Image (tube, rainbow, N blue to C red; front, side):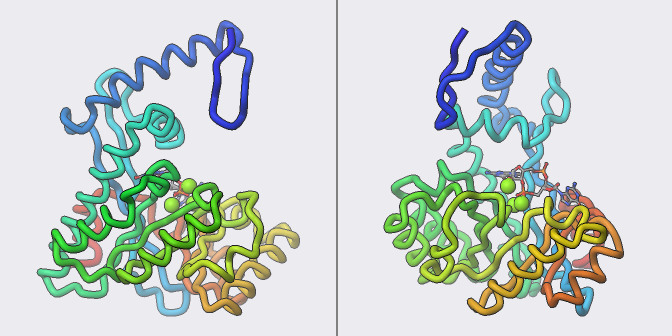
Length: 275
Ligand code: C2E
Ligand code: MG
Ligand code: MG
Ligand code: MG
């Protein structure tokens, strides 16, 4: 059996993999109704200023709880949503929920609060992406700086298109970050062309940074590069005090990871930081 899968080309599926693809098809049909059945929710993970311990930004991470499959990891259902095109509808839902939350915080006087939203490359490459973002900002009368868009290098395949979308977004005033930095294949030259505010160092470089000099060298180099281009850095996957110490020593601005908090429901965030 042969199934086509994006750029990876053709892959041969054995019996077990065929079962997997059947499961995926069933999952897709459930995912299709996940919004109306209210099976989706958003968890939030704080991003901590390493110097002061202050927190004013959070990453929104989608959760799917389905009666048949239970909690399905984003690593499983996001690719299904992307392949089926459902990510467009789901991505809109996430943006709407996040903007509603930001509006609430603004109304409550928490003017510095910011939420970062993961944007899939399918969303980013939509013709109307920038104007959709504009609509949300207007609809909820948001301070654009409260909204951060996490883009991956895989979204940045066409330099001219990417540049014009990013410029349009920057003109609105939203914050742009590059997620999973260091894992993509794009050339570094794009960094000086694109109006990027924040680089998020992928967690694979942080996980063993306390025992791997090469990881530390890579993290340090990314931070230097970012700073010399006027960007801030967030380290992902901060799990230990050792990680925090090393990252502080190399002037990384923020950290995000289980050491500080797992992604949690909004109620927990409000209780911890907005009461
Ligand atoms: P990501 O954007 O790189 O998000 C960070 C992931 O690392 C999250 O996994 C988070 O729970 C996990 N994480 C945070 N701290 C730690 C830590 O200290 N150690 C370890 N081992 N992991 C940590 P999650 O929530 O399972 O999401 C996985 C990926 O799914 C995300 O990676 C993102 O690419 C995608 N995703 C999640 N929500 C959305 C969404 O709303 N839209 C889109 N397009 N993608 C999403
Ligand atoms: Mg992210
Ligand atoms: Mg990441
Ligand atoms: Mg990611």
